[in-house]
Image (cartoon, rainbow, N blue to C red; front, side, top):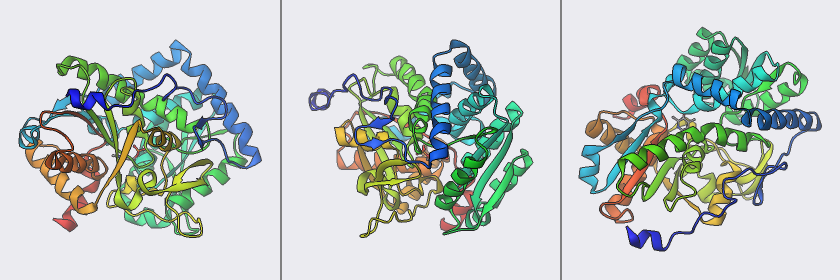
Length: 400
Ligand SMILES: *Cc1c(COP(=O)(O)O)cnc(C)c1O
């Protein structure tokens, strides 16, 4: 693979480090919130810095991740698909984490932080419901209350997840404003937080939002990349894969994965939905408390995203991804819905794994890039399988 290593931009010391008190990743990030939330965000930032430096906090979180989530998740060689594609494909199995995706890694960390801060209730917004279910799960485990804001339209589309949240004891609040989807649910959750900052903790579901959330969520998800780095060292002759690939909605599973490899020569690839390509096709803007790359219309209004995978249905991307893109340290590519469904079925039939449609985006790019030669024969590829496909079965039933 020497031809690949030669052209690699090397990670500099500061890449994926602490973004500092202002939470800037190059031109991106920061904190654009109403006055009452500035102090609330400062309090979260200070509490996280202190907790993250405390070995006791890290031990408690590691225990929960081992005993409740089932970490470490395996690194599974995709034998049959690798043989078909002529590459060496390794799957990091976040689909095997409790509740069926990587989201629980982040949520347990934030729930533990909320308890440490003396908060008794978690607030969250959710689109498809996966972050809401993870939040309701963490709240139940730690004896906290949970209030989850969800667009009315999403509640209809994702009725089983609404029910799951209620079984877990969470309150689900329907959001009736605007397009009645995730964007409006996020705005309403932030407005609600303003009035209850002393009792409630706002639990963000991806590497988005005002500082410190993008940094904190990446740190809480880096367990994916750190585990995978060690597992690759044992599995691969070179110790490090040639390519590291993950799907990108807001970008938390990708950020957590990349964090483990940014200091190595591995090439980092983020795969977006063609209809939700904040990094690949967005322009600079501000939404939901942070500056980053968003899909916008001619007037600079942020537009709605469209993807077959509900978790990638976000018009923007986390600020650190916009920065990694600007630096040339990571590449962001897109795939179409049709390729995604084919890729999901192909993984199911070659490896016995039905992936989440979000994760199938990463698989679809690997299949395409192996066919085009962009992934050279024999290349080793680490792919983070962010979740399992159970939640997408009704979508697949309509299409297949
Ligand atoms: C939510 C979700 C995603 C997208 O979120 P990121 O923050 O980009 O990781 C991807 N895969 C699954 C299974 C999800 O539930």
